[in-house]
Length: 472
Image (tube, rainbow, N blue to C red):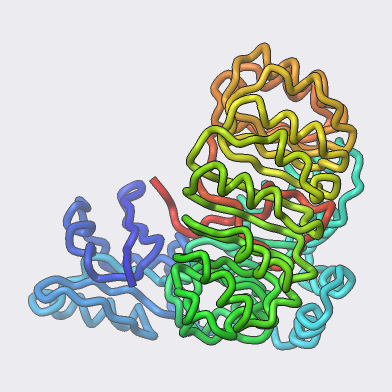
């Protein structure tokens, strides 16, 4: 338990996330009024009794307490009769205890969990009906890929509209998770507030990846991906066996070998590595035991020769490569001769000069290119990139944006220029040049979530992320 987030909106108190008592007093003291008798459930004012089983946040002072009750209206009435002994500063329903999925859909839900194809998901979505059904159809079509840019652009915009309007409600996870990701219609990735929250599997039956997991926790077998936060190699013995996705931190190079020797990694498709030092031999010991490995993310603060050697040793099974590092100079011409280069389909590169263009030009199947961490490059329009469908750019002047949009726009499903005021200023021009979607506005700071499996035609970073807590 680490945090409470509360706001005063239009003269009313609204709590987004409640996970700690530490900051409650200061937050509620900063409010200008108390709200006895006003109970909120996911920002909707509840005015009638009989709302069913629920948990309520009650904050009192001297002493400060956080208490959960089943009947908020009865509690409020009792509090109003005892003003000297119990002062209600703020009160809000933060989550329901009952199962949000109707009993008659349980068989369909079980089938969608057991079968990882689209048909059962679409049947379940149709049973839910309305916009909920549309989201599944939109996301399944996007995940299959092979779309005309204009069609893909329409679906991407529609996905964001649906999730912005209804995503938090459909997730059933407000007050329980920090954020989640809808994939092919249902929540597959969750970052829970409480790591031992046993309700997650019932609230999100399609849960496949837990972000922020720890080695001492047990998860249902349906969870195939775990993003471990800082657990040491010896604590991960057997914890990666059978997983399709994993995030691990290597404190020492030999940790990679230890993890490989104490886990069965034959099902692993997605691997996110955090490290400072990693020898090529230990890296090879880890990746060579994962024949299905398709996605590799390298997050490192390491000298450029080390990272360069690792990039050159990437196995040929990799289709999506994300590399971040702290130094600006990499021998990209040498990395471009790596055996994996002809097979890369999705690429995100660290900060650098224009040397990276040698590598980009050498990738014939490049579908998604994320250069948001790079420096602006005037030479990009000179490249031949016939398979390119997604492009994310760093901040650059208007003329360069126009040149890139004119060069690749007709083939792009998405041009991501968020965080660039110059792009916002010529947004209409860019939309006219790009057949697909143009993503303007502020840039999000959150990294792309880790997914359980790799799908070639699926968007690389334009995913169904829903924030369940507000950020400053």
